[in-house]
Image 1 (spheres, helix red, strand yellow):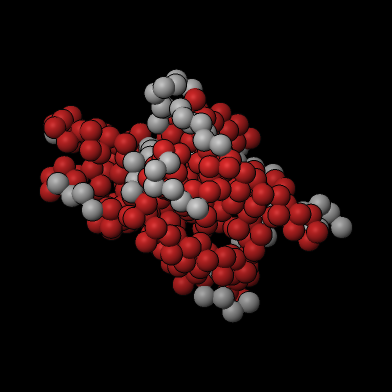
Image 2 (tube, rainbow, N blue to C red):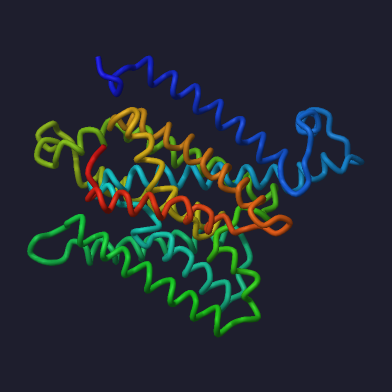
Length: 336
């Protein structure tokens, strides 16, 4: 039995991934410009002292920041898995296909023109922008007599991303008075979110990832080809529509919370796939765990690069992800 097909190995990997996520979560809460002891982290949850500076920092900033990083990282990783399966393109990801750029543009446009500040409204605006960008990329990528091709859809994604980012920068230049309020959506950030606003959004992300996991058996069949999937009684059109909605929902929600954070949706699926293969029943949950862990680690790195200042987390993920993308492109996007 091969490594990829070993159920024992996959269970061990799942347990280790959960442990790594917990350790990363602890590190995200404890470390930064101001270091907090592990004991204070524990007591902040089970014996909160309103007079303790450590407890106040944890409850007001560190916990919400770590939670946002977990949600955004998991959502981007799972949306990357779904997008790569949907397009059968190993270079697919929300950032490369223009979904992130479209969501950011929509948020910046409406927040600048109409002074929108509600996080719930940002979610719907992000969905709108992600949907428009996704539809444009798919339309351009599938145009022509050859239909949808990996090269054409990557080029279309790059073009749409550049277009929406240019529009975003133009709006910010013309409305500089609102620059500070929306700049972190352009660079990407998981800080500055109030816990009372973030917690109600947790079920939304959980439901999205759960639906993706439930769709895993259908994705496995879909990867064998449309003709075979139809022969097995699968409604391929419905599955593709559901996957598209999940991609837009997860990626749009991630942008609404964290801004334009790239490459998580590209790197994580490849890293996990190289270990456990193409079974999406394992690939999706493991990618969610790895995506959350990777973004937590990237956020930690961002805090220490130029202390006491912080590097935007979108810059950190780009530094990590750009060489990875070049490596995949040089391989020609071949499967591991």
